[in-house]
Length: 341
Image: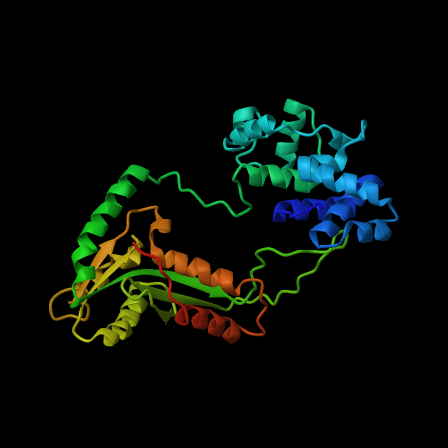
């Protein structure tokens, strides 16, 4: 008895070939393997596809031995007939872990057109389906995501040194019950929905109706490095006066405890008003401020809170801005964000 157990990638590829291949035999083979994966018996597949049971059995046996390559066997002139060997796939994997520019392809990141051009030039192979190229990208340990931004002024060595200093400085505060340690950052949200990614119908123009508005809201967030709860305060503007007002509200939650806040190097974090309120007898006298290294927003845990929260409420169109703000506040207040310095 032949058993077929497909990986998710194989299942996606077979479905794509079944739907899009111009060759009837390729579609039939893909359908037969998918049916077997669903638990159908060979004789039932034979009846549904109007093919002899021995033919179905031969297809399934071929797939169990050669996997995806067996779908295209017997087609001398088919572009998919020339499959890549395991050695060639390893070679491609090594190549894809370098930027396309290293191979005279003027791009910073690999995509389907650039990998298609490389594979055709290097191995004389052209795949019919985009899914085959996705498979090569996944095989090479690459994933589809938005690349991180990089500031050319960023100095990795200095950032690493500064982060070690910060961790050493807050270590005792984290262990001391009289201290609370927070990372902090500001963000801004607007009414317009953010469409991150969507499955859209092929061949048809897709319209996303968006209610654009100039309405926006600034926030100050403070992420507790012990409990990972994030405090959230509305700001009418991102400036010293508004930051001080928000910190005054924030400090009421912590009685006489000493507070350490680690935040970035924004001008309004180091202005005259902020410095004045840190003096003895003033509002922020029990607050100790530390600055993250410059040009390193990814090192601030609160930045990751914003990213996660905005991702959570993305692809949703809210009726009005109050609903947008409510969704944002709920998402922040109802979660624990385990991001540490």
